[in-house]
Image (cartoon, rainbow, N blue to C red):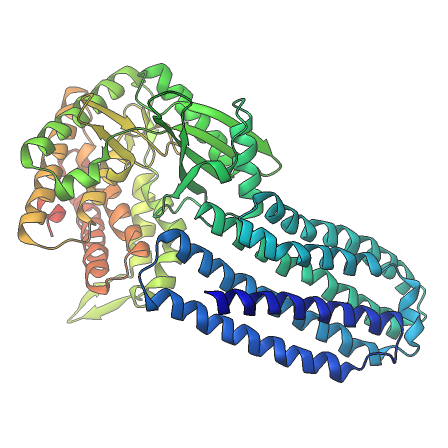
Length: 545
């Protein structure tokens, strides 16, 4: 490690020399040659390669704890960005011969750029070795300062370009300032890498700010350096989601766990509103919102962490009696919610409109799924898109006789089961709305089917869950006089089968889902041509792999 540390220190010093040489080249043209800057860049490139090799060697040579591995990974990222910053110095130097008069550039206020970069570079080594969050944050801030300074020079040059004179010098000057601004991008990556080495998680600086300010909005002075943060992967919402563990100030030292979400303003505000409505309907069903912080287009939430496990975990691993109990609680909870929120107003079926909006993503992953009209021995098979268009017209003619307040994304990994309290909880609620309950039913059923496990025992467990939930949903429909339940469920399942393929790389399994969706569309459309939809019956076997 000592050699690695020494090379890293030399790397920082050489990059600082490179920045200083570039500044002298601009201050006093002729005192520094472009060749000398290029030559030092070659040395910096070699140092970067040596450090990179040493980093990987240390990781693979002997067992290291996560914290040491994170630090080595961060050092490698820092080194790569220092090398990139040095490259920008070379780019600046190579622009100077394009100035008709070297003194032309000196009319502009460029020295503060270099001072900001040098100050940030001087902080890199102590920030990483001392694991100093404050210094890391200041390194990140250099990017914002350089952006602001670049904007001032950009506006000035743009105004001068309108005069039509000195255009060559002005364009060259703009390029130089652009490279100076891009040094800030490299410094931002350096600062964020150091934050990663401290927290053990990859924070963008705006996410760091969001977590710090959201914790602060609860009257706490905790920052990510003083909390444990564990990312929660697997979400496709576009939000940053993590579990925050904050030690309590009590004698037992019990940790308080929260869920941190940061991202799209509209989605997270919708989730907050949905949580509040669910809480009013059934207290304790959703997690409680602990804090909310708004900043521009982004919102951050701190939400209560719910103990227990997801229903998906139960389907995959639980004993049958535990799974049976959890499924009973799910159906009981869902029934109570539907009864409590039922309104006697029609809800149009929008399954195919939703599906058609997602087909671009399906075809990006599986271009061979986009087939045209085909004929074989006089039998014509329409394209999938054509089938979906016909089914979309059918959706316009069929509606649920009532609405309920639905989850909106009722995947089995969005249902939390607490064995200790014998309760069910809902999470990820930004799509909740008053709608056709078959939206949730179809998503629940297909989220079971698409679990990528194929042993006979596992599939029997999945089939059991699907059959029991379908039986429950049918009983609810019968009790409330929903005569087109089977037809609408067929359309909903077709939508979920087909659109789920955009998340499945296993070609055989994805095709299985596509063909099931196409089969269901063909079946319900053929039925409608001959008999009333009220007589349609879903082929239950389609839910078994």
